[in-house]
Length: 463
Ligand SMILES: *[C@@H]1O[C@H](CO)[C@@H](O)[C@H](O)[C@H]1NC(C)=O
Ligand SMILES: *[C@@H]1O[C@H](CO)[C@@H](O)[C@H](O)[C@H]1NC(C)=O
Ligand SMILES: *[C@@H]1O[C@H](CO)[C@@H](O)[C@H](O)[C@H]1NC(C)=O
Ligand SMILES: *[C@@H]1O[C@H](CO)[C@@H](O)[C@H](O)[C@H]1NC(C)=O
Ligand SMILES: *[C@@H]1O[C@H](CO)[C@@H](O)[C@H](O)[C@H]1NC(C)=O
Ligand SMILES: *[C@@H]1O[C@H](CO)[C@@H](O)[C@H](O)[C@H]1NC(C)=O
Ligand SMILES: *[C@@H]1O[C@H](CO)[C@@H](O)[C@H](O)[C@H]1NC(C)=O
Ligand SMILES: *[C@@H]1O[C@H](CO)[C@@H](O)[C@H](O)[C@H]1NC(C)=O
Ligand SMILES: [Zn+2]
Image 1 (tube, rainbow, N blue to C red):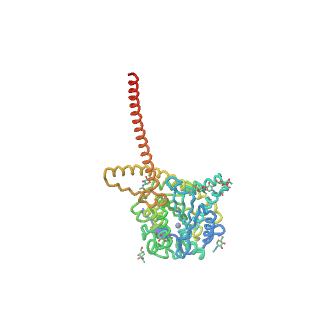
Image 2: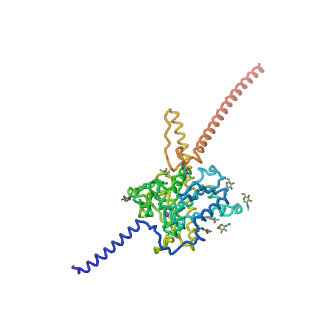
Image 3: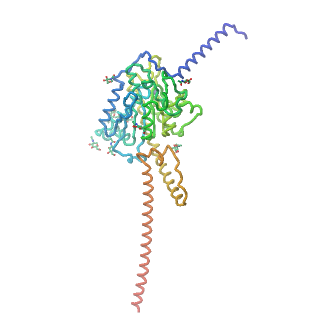
């Protein structure tokens, strides 16, 4: 059937229009959100939201008021010299030995992206939740029990403001679209994990500018150092703008080869628990390159998972707008001031699920590790007796092994001490048995000799 040529032209034009808009849409998505200033229709109310100086003041006060379980470290600094506010929270007077296998070590990072204010607020909410319940005057209340549980079973380090220069820049320029450091580097593209890939940019004007080389920015140093000296069991990089929990990996190479993290099942299980902590608005979760539809090269959480072999490494996007009309950046990444508290209380239970899961995992893997260690040491001892060479101990990031950096505060000493103790008890038991045996022998002999003696006597008597 013939159609009029005018109609065909119209269809063609419509198709073209459709294709063009799709292309523009995809280009916009792949380019990321612009960091150029936009006309903000909404600005935060700084009596609800903190600013750079009030975050610092707040954390300093908390560390002074609760010196027994909060320490603030100002050694790590940005390029402009601002403190990255590294805060450690744990009951410092309860040693690691009070918990079998040691306290669970957690490293949490906030404020990598300057315009994402919400994660930093969520950190403050969590810390204050714990400190508010820690006071002795609250003995036996459920608030107190909860805080004791956190402080005595966990050792948590918060990188409170990973990118203070960027925050400072926003507050001075009121460009709420700004994401990078003051010089525009996206520190979450500056890590040594597929650095330089297409999921980042070499253009210093781009929001995903990766910097000149891995760790070119002083802001990324703190991650590398803490990963080494603290050897966390879990690392989480907090963001906002979506409601997602990502497990590694996000980089383009992994997407291409469909690389999976070693303990994918465990990571997904953790993500599921965390997602369910908010039944009214559950988080989406999955492999980062599957869930996002874009790739990100040189990210903190990929580096922690792939390079540093941290057992649990996640990126969590805490908040997503319901409907955003564009124009304004602040409310694209952060809830409006009026609903800030409600949104904070909504994400708070996620921390509890995270901690509960990690505690359970650590306890179980410690128990498994002990059994393995005992078997290993028996095998090694037997091998030695056979005159063979000592078996190499298999490396396993999930466990504490002799060659693991994680031994620093807990050490391989406890299991080997236990093995030694068991050996000692065994020796004592053997000696005791031997002594008993010898005693019995002696007694028997004496009885025999007494008998024979009495027999002699009786013989003598008789005679
Ligand atoms: C930051 O917030 C505090 C407390 O709300 C306020 O007193 C201070 O003036 C603010 N600082 C700046 C630089 O806006
Ligand atoms: C980070 O680690 C490096 C190398 O171990 C060390 O030189 C540097 O002083 C550390 N930085 C801080 C702030 O501790
Ligand atoms: C800290 O640990 C000590 C020693 O185990 C204990 O006596 C104290 O109650 C704990 N304090 C808190 C706040 O958990
Ligand atoms: C802290 O959060 C926990 C878990 O949501 C809650 O049970 C506890 O009551 C909170 N404590 C305070 C002081 O708000
Ligand atoms: C709470 O317990 C501590 C020690 O466990 C005790 O010193 C203190 O008096 C108690 N406070 C109250 C209000 O019961
Ligand atoms: C526990 O904390 C919550 C929130 O801070 C508070 O409303 C509640 O009164 C506290 N409960 C007790 C028993 O102190
Ligand atoms: C930046 O990357 C593009 C392609 O990704 C490349 O063509 C260009 O030469 C690079 N520029 C610099 C300065 O490296
Ligand atoms: C993954 O985790 C499980 C459970 O903790 C452990 O048995 C396994 O060895 C881990 N695998 C690796 C490669 O770390
Ligand atoms: Zn972000």
